[in-house]
Length: 343
Figure 1 (cartoon, rainbow, N blue to C red):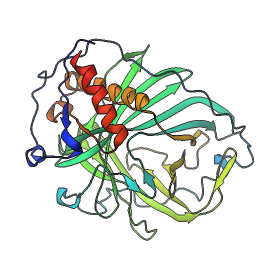
Figure 2: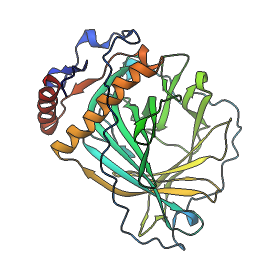
Figure 3: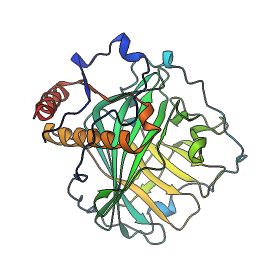
Figure 4: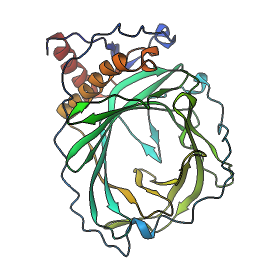
């Protein structure tokens, strides 16, 4: 597109010692990408026909937790030295290798009918140093009624104990296919924000509520609580799962809580507001992307980051994303990305 991006490519997928030193980026120092968001085609609706008698509304498991709604402490200390290979998200309950795409389709809890709400999460070939840890960059985009409403960068990392941490998020709103700002941006280590655990590496029902994410500047405080470690008969339209990890996410500031169900080897299969007549997101597709599709996802993430530096003072405190060529397809994507950035 004839524009120069400030994105650093990591040779051979390795990091250098200097890369581990956090650097601040002056706001406005990066070039602005002046174009509308280029969004992928609207995904087709799931083909399965929901069965109201066995849908997620009937299987969001026990009533909401009655945990003390006070502040939730970290499950364990966040220490960069505990992250030996942080971008390798291979947790049994959250396997997200680069090039993995997950599609979540919404159904109504009061009848199981498909709703025009789709969330697609893609693990890109990019990584970003946040608070001293190289996090995998996930690109998430959300559709309602056939129109894009949000495109987000989500940063997750796995520590040496298998815990999956969330280190920040840049959730950009979309209005009439144009970016409309991201006021809920938070980055661990900036403005008092703290990373938290999304999925524990060793889930235990006896653990008290723990910190999932905290960002006082935007009034964000999310807690996690393990409800079941091996639940059976957790059902979504057309399929049921056994041996499911159920984690409740709640906030002392907001209600109702959200139940997330994770299946070993698959990851997130359902997310629903506990004790609510709202909607449930269920997994309707999981696949490995082609080289061309990975390039498209990486390109979307790069454009999002360019806009983030221009619009968010919080994001401006971070260093640019880097390319992590972890497999053969990633090497091919890196080559194609480099060619695109040169032209």
